[in-house]
Image (cartoon, rainbow, N blue to C red; front, side, top):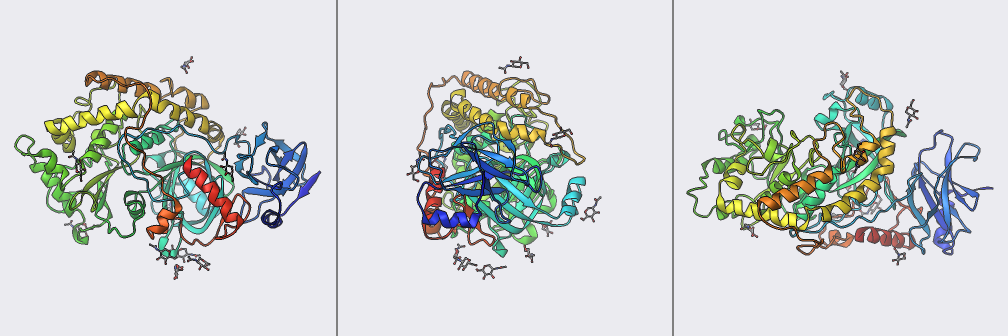
Length: 608
Ligand SMILES: *[C@@H]1O[C@H](CO)[C@@H](O)[C@H](O)[C@H]1NC(C)=O
Ligand SMILES: *[C@@H]1O[C@H](CO)[C@@H](O)[C@H](O)[C@H]1NC(C)=O
Ligand SMILES: *[C@@H]1O[C@H](CO)[C@@H](O)[C@H](O)[C@H]1NC(C)=O
Ligand SMILES: *[C@@H]1O[C@H](CO)[C@@H](O)[C@H](O)[C@H]1NC(C)=O
Ligand SMILES: *[C@@H]1O[C@H](CO)[C@@H](O)[C@H](O)[C@H]1NC(C)=O
Ligand SMILES: *[C@@H]1O[C@H](CO)[C@@H](O)[C@H](O)[C@H]1NC(C)=O
Ligand SMILES: *[C@@H]1O[C@H](CO)[C@@H](O)[C@H](O)[C@H]1NC(C)=O
Ligand SMILES: *[C@@H]1O[C@H](CO)[C@@H](O)[C@H](O)[C@H]1NC(C)=O
Ligand SMILES: *[C@@H]1O[C@H](CO)[C@@H](O)[C@H](O)[C@H]1NC(C)=O
Ligand SMILES: *[C@@H]1O[C@H](CO)[C@@H](O)[C@H](O)[C@H]1NC(C)=O
């Protein structure tokens, strides 16, 4: 028997009646446009419905169900007949729940429990947001102009393409969030060479477009990494070290109902990142200068070598301003050039207090050393130490007495043996040949200033003793591997079009490269890299790695929605048009039962 309940009817029933009515929510794309989904309980199928505002979330209420109900979702054809039933049985996430999560068809687990990563150095959280819950895989459903999408896919390297505006819908375990007219395009440099493109969305905050206070997001394709977890693991290390960084959440992307793949969604580093992540959402901070560093060629690196007093001497693709700060528009690098001049003039042998010289007014020395220690420990081949690339420097007015430059790293897929040029690890002293391409913050500070070198070695030791060891990282890595398996399997099954390269990694590679260096292009396995590096550094620096996993410092308290409000930062995402819907099946209201349910679910997800 098939029962039909429209979602508005479901809403009315939910808000007015007993707890034994359960709202079921399945996320899925029927194989035929006329198809739909249902929920099967004891062999009885109840059809679920999606509206223009909720698709691809199909919802409905089953009045006789209890919170201990066992159920499966079913794909239905146009006549309501079952086409495909999930091969497993589900239970609600909570014995008192009145609604299921938004649960992806055929994905057995929606919320995971990730083993925590121990904290090495004091950290702060970015401002409150509903995105970047890394214990679940969200869904991004994009509706775009068909011809514009076809042109983008056919010619991803076309840099003169028109501004594509799309309808963006984000679905997590609890919410459905829709915004129209969002700027969308493919992103990256080398990632454009691959068939699976990387993408970015820009929400125009001047037009009241928001995405939970994260208006610039990128979808990283992770094509070079068969395990898809290297970059996320690196972000976990940065969080452990208290370095302000892009947070990340895995998502499934669909455009015009077509599958595009599994991605890692991160913040794009723009002005809002400075406010929300570096300054915790505090709207009273007037941001300092920020410059983005890249190395388009091996001969054109962001090495920080002084080349002259004006920006005319610096390639705009190597040093690009993001936030102007105190710089005049006519010479946007002035403040950074002063820093590079100081670096050129700095003599490690004659500067009386080298730590103070750098750390008092010029550089957040501890943050820089932690970044460089992690680059070395993870073998980051495409960042500063090895390649003079993929970082930002932000003149943070809140650090020290009068502000100083803070290191903000980016792009960590080339780590743990992905893209590493040899299959041999080396000591940090001999890791990179700086005689050919000097990176003076490494050569002058870390290698040639004894007091700073001692701080660097202490940083390596504290990181390895706390977080950079198998016992602390492997449980987390294995949890990601399990969490991603169903979605990775789906990703590699997608038949993409477009001119780019295909690495051809398989599910076997996805599992194997955790321990085995059996996959092409990989010079190491993820776990092998971490084991060998932590052992070799502890041997070289003569310290032991203690057993056990413990925070070295107190973890930072997670922000709540109210923190954002108290700061006046509107951190909950603002008053977006288009609307938010909760898994309870209704538009989120500011008062009433539904809002309470949502509040509890959000709090639970925050605590997890
Ligand atoms: C289940 O939900 C109730 C009320 O919504 C909440 O108090 C309780 O903590 C939840 N239990 C679990 C295990 O999440
Ligand atoms: C690049 O995009 C522009 C704008 O959409 C279009 O006019 C042009 O034909 C495209 N070029 C190629 C080679 O596809
Ligand atoms: C889309 O947003 C842009 C600003 O980002 C605005 O200029 C334009 O009018 C909007 N278009 C529609 C159809 O709302
Ligand atoms: C954005 O919202 C503000 C306040 O609600 C309103 O005054 C303004 O006109 C809106 N801007 C646009 C471009 O819609
Ligand atoms: C510095 O860059 C700005 C912005 O691109 C440009 O207008 C200016 O001419 C440059 N100044 C010099 C001295 O190159
Ligand atoms: C660097 O300065 C900060 C204050 O801005 C201080 O907390 C920190 O201990 C200093 N680091 C060193 C190595 O002196
Ligand atoms: C991809 O194409 C193959 C061969 O045509 C087909 O068997 C497979 O079902 C397709 N995969 C998807 C996800 O459509
Ligand atoms: C490593 O790869 C080899 C060859 O594919 C395989 O036989 C072996 O079982 C793998 N070992 C592990 C631990 O995955
Ligand atoms: C937060 O939102 C309120 C109401 O929309 C607005 O008045 C206020 O200016 C906003 N604050 C910030 C910092 O954007
Ligand atoms: C949010 O938008 C609605 C509808 O546009 C409006 O009635 C309400 O006042 C806005 N709230 C805030 C806080 O701006």
